[in-house]
Image (tube, rainbow, N blue to C red):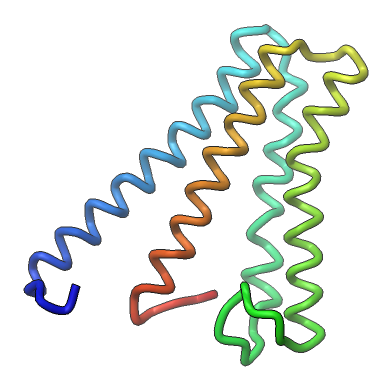
Length: 138
């Protein structure tokens, strides 16, 4: 990547951001379709977890750790990792519990879990992009 000009790098970065936006948009569409197609809006409860998910990273990640994926860190970094993990588990558990209780069907469960998978891929890709760039919040 060092041999590319600044304009080529900017174009490549813009394309990656566009694909990232398309991934997030498709995750939102899957989330809404899981509710609208089956005329049952209970699966929207997972949106609460999607909103809560980035909050610990924004509020508590002020440590001197270079990456969220590193094993070293102070108490706040460990607390951030715990809250993020709890939100991820909640994102999977809510649709599973709703299916077990008979509130939603198999199709809504599949769409909810595929929406989670799309969001997870988008998040991991965003973390990879921020590690490659000079600016990084995480």
